Amino acid sequence: MAYFYESVSRTFSEYIMIPNLTTKDCFTDNVKLRTPLVRYKKGEEPEFCLNVPFASAIMQSVSNDTLAIALAKSGGISFIFCSQPIESQCEMVSRVKKFKAGFVISDSNLKPDDTLEAVIEMKNKTGHSTMAVTSDGTSAGKLMGVVTGRDYRLSRDDVKKKVSEFMTPLDKLITGKLGITLKEANDKIWDNKLNSLPIIDDSGNLAYFVFRKDYDDHKDNPEELLDDEKRYFVGAGINTRDYKDRVPALIEAGADILCIDSSDGYSQWQEDTVRWIRAEYGDSIRIGAGNVVDAEGFRFLADAGADFVKVGIGGGSICITREQKGIGRGQATAVVEVAKARDDYYKETGIYVPICSDGGIVHDYHIVLALAMGADFIMMGRYFARFDESPTKVIKLGNNYVKEYWGEGSNRARNWQRYDAEDKTLKFEEGVDSYVPYAGKLKDNLSKTLSKIKSTMCSCGSINIKELREKSRIALVSSTSLVEGGAHDVILKDKSDF
Ligand code: IMP
Image 1: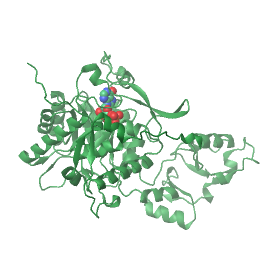
Image 2 (image 1 turned 45 degrees about the vertical axis):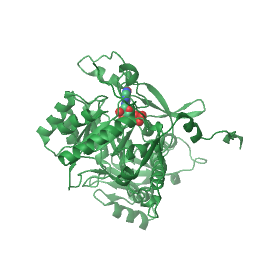
Image 3 (image 1 turned 180 degrees about the vertical axis):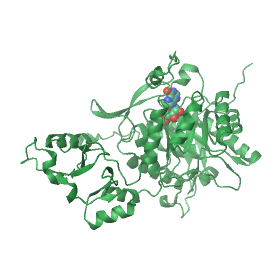
Image 4 (image 1 turned 90 degrees about the vertical axis):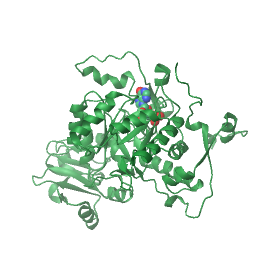
């Protein structure tokens, strides 16, 4: 007969935190969110940590190179999606690794015989007013000059005027040589009162721009997640089918850590994949596995050698796994049980295997609950899909701006496999195709979320995740007290009235 659990499985919205004494050292600037990313032995330090406990989901509509750079800048990690050909995934990884903070590959480029009309068009398209003029109009062509808003006057100049007639030509430009450090580049910018500095190689080809504003940006990101060579840290998703080809290519491209992407990770396919990586690379390559929702699943993957284990089945915002297959578990219950299994495993073996709560975060306080319940870090899809840096375009839908967000188990995401030799026609979908409200820049949103999290932690008397776990007092809420928690019994003013 089937085994029946006595308690129901619960989700984050069913819980609330009871404040503890806020001691005087509990202020938001004093809260540190550094957390382990990979397994480590008792008494040793983890090889990799996150500075903020966030990972972006392994999804086409979430984790590409632009989001990875923005998130690493803020201290978290992206896992570049694997539902794409190996080559394009590797290109994304290598774009992150090649991205030099402060050194920007020019994305607005013209040829000398382009016209002012093309300049205006490009400015409208990219929003950038500094454009490189190169021999072939590419970002790596021979630098001929630069066009900025100061080089033309729309009211006077003929739109058919050639770029070569009004650009600032190379001989009048101050440039930097490839190999220059960011500090040297910025000194040049300041000493010469420039807004940007083109960096060229020995043959005169354009390599990068350094912009004055980016230097400030660099200083503004003290939590940046960098590798030993000061490049942004990036993860990559893999699957349990083509890993023997995909893993070596991703490592070659520079991926810092891998993670198996699957809705159900309690499987021998995952065990084989992790063991193959261990056999090939020993401990030099770090690999996360999942997803699981119970102690048995955790132990299975930890024993197989997983460096972290992802928790969550069916809780994702675009996920219909529970409806379609009837498997899963309330996200809070899953995290609590797996966290206990992790702690037991640590006591028994002296090995700490971090866990990641994946999916189902709706409110920022859910993140604090997940951490308090034992998650080491949190993976989110919907949250990141809303930002400028995610791979999709902003669309106007009625009066609202939105971005598209679709599940990896939707036909849309799985379509890429149609190009595979093997027929993988889907019989049913496990995810939906949807919109999420557009929310602007990752950095602005993340900093708001972080200040809320830190403020909740201070109310709970904690200035780091370890303390939060030890001190938290968590209560169930009734459905009526949930109503009490929102604005109630008042007539809300419509902001548009003002
Ligand atoms: P969200 O943060 O609630 O949007 O959930 C994101 C998570 O949902 C991902 O990290 C995956 O674990 C999971 N997920 C992504 N695509 C699908 C799908 O198509 N079906 C089920 N779960 C999915």
